[in-house]
Length: 134
Image (cartoon, rainbow, N blue to C red):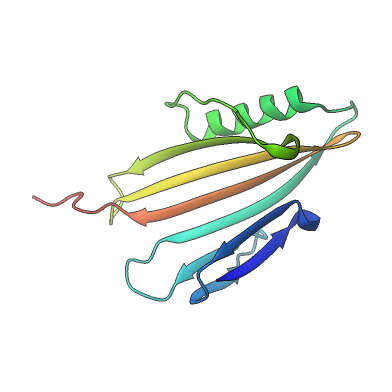
């Protein structure tokens, strides 16, 4: 396993050691295994700032808006995590794509006092087994 830290150590994860790491133009970290039909994990950490102090309610509202924009047909719920982090997770199937794909997403938010929020977006896409088959 390979371990990585993001956002000054606020986010840590491990991936299989044979996965390839790339960085896309928009600072998205991409991880995948170099085999056909491999799933792909994309990670992006973004910091948002404003003129007013932030708290956990502001973070929850931002996560709900982001998830609602990305998956408007879903009902989203905030899951509290240790150290003041908050999580939303959801799945989307794109069956009209060729090949059809499933995307599982996790959005993790945290306050960075006094006026900032960090959101880590994790999106794992993989082909949908048997989708589109007669």
